[in-house]
Length: 324
Ligand code: ADE
Ligand code: ZN
Image (cartoon, rainbow, N blue to C red; front, side, top):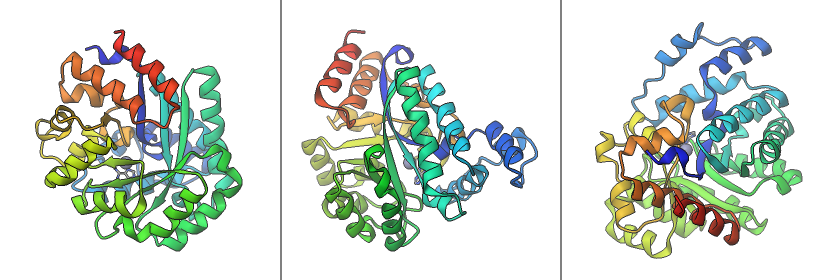
């Protein structure tokens, strides 16, 4: 497969979702945080999910071991080293500050550790990046506003905001004001939509929040007019095949909508979401789709097209992809 050799961007990656069980156990010990798993095997065997909420319960439990600036550095650095092995040359990564500040971890410790790792990756690994602050949608909008307040002193290191966590019952419109404020601050906007929630949430993310990109967007396929609009506007969809399979969002990889949407001319991309929990990093997600070389090249080029890189840098990487 050509995919291992192609440069690519990863655009949908939750740093907290890269916490491998080995690191979870090591940090639990380092920080004296009790966890219910006594071994890596025991943790991994718990990674069976019937729904998004099943996964999220474990994801929030896992992140309880992250306490210090150094922990966030180590977490992000471990991901960036894996990304390098996958020939990721640009990463636009999410973090969930509310998952940490609610436990008494200062915003500055979370942001500082991640930011330092991203800066080191640029110089030591040659990986450029953007950092995207996600609001947890199961919490209320005031909590999101306070999180944006906490981010204000650090905005030079934050490219955008996103929306994640439990989708059903928490439509994008619940966050209309905080997204409008983020836009007025010059931030880029993305949102998880149409993962478990209906196609209508994808419409709301576009119309009410005015997002630049949709995370997942699988269920847009249920609405042909919406699919036509996503194609027309070339809205990036950051899709995550192994995540969708493990969370029961698609019945099988063969049924995944990505190949059809790619064929139809939408700006779809391949990403790993929470690779420590879903059994694969970004190249594994490409391989899982079983597509031919032309499609792999097309998807790697799309990863740059849909990124927040400057146009001339996009052009450079797309040319490199097409030279393979
Ligand atoms: N947080 C981390 N991974 C997520 C996903 N796949 N959907 C929603 N929220 C998330
Ligand atoms: Zn996600």
